Image 1 (cartoon, rainbow, N blue to C red):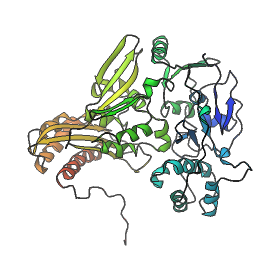
Image 2: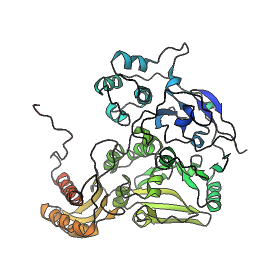
Image 3: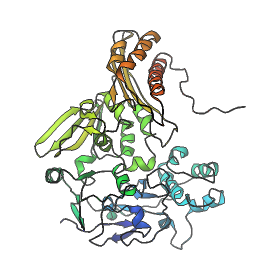
Image 4: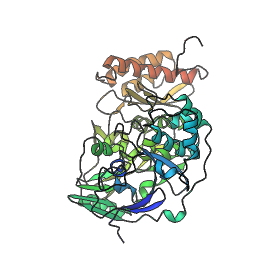
Length: 475
């Protein structure tokens, strides 16, 4: 039976919204009670409304027990159907006492004005289950007054509280349709349903994570008439890792993609780049299919797809077709997707054994920033001579560029400084950067050329440090 009312768990309690609730209201607005009769849970704050500051962080509780921090400002109510959300109010104990994380933050002087604290606490609650680098866990949370040292110290000593939801909290995904005045929000549960909807509504928003489309709601207050959400279609979430490479459904989150990269030999460079793609909150929702659909020239994941020779599978009621990603990207924010098609999956071939594969992102900040120049470079050699060269750059033209002149300068030669110098000069014919506030055209060209030299140093002098993360005087 098709559900007609949005229903989910909020802080462990079943919550059903009135049938006429707008499914494209942001979770943040609804929680704070400023839209659609929300519960007035004001611990979740609005800072930037763009997914950058982390003040709106809440946690998705997953069926496998994982906790995924997400930005409530970018999450639409229709995306929550059948899922479980935890806000800072839901961390209280049965007696109303603060959670141990909240106690630790207060006792360690990890809070000052308190505006950002609820979001940081929610990131900490997710981090205590997954572990890892506390700095990376905090990359999506901005604190303007406390300073991060005491907060990092709290993160370093966190322990999992063991809290879990019962399996019955997660019903099997089912088809749903939510209506509000002038709006329809579709949640198909099968690929056939999805393709039929796409054929019938070619102008509808195709929504997966919504880290880009969500901005049109939070920032620009758009109210889309028709939305087709991909979250309940199993094929959209398939992950297949093999020695040949990695196949990902278009709605697989970056967080899952990052974990899957660890199962494919040769994708270490991509794993490192993905760890810098947005923040944990963005990676918890954002998808590779969304990055392809947006076709932005500064999409972090796109240069690696071109350098690897990745292919994208498109599907419609007419059938399926497969295209190399570099043919799928046709121009500035344009792609080869037909009006009745959806991106079904992406296949990333594993680099050849022994090949040198590197992904680079040059930005003003290491975390949570837009790339000034992005690059992915694959070079394979036989007998000391370059036999394969695939060089892809983002942020240097209207779309991701395959640097074929530079590749030609490398082929058939030793991968030495002279060959790279020729390839760097050839880059001037491959890319056409613009000047903007992130960097001048001359700077972008120099960066792209420098990244080629860095790849050669990595390949020929593996013990040589090629990154400087910080410079401190007197140390």
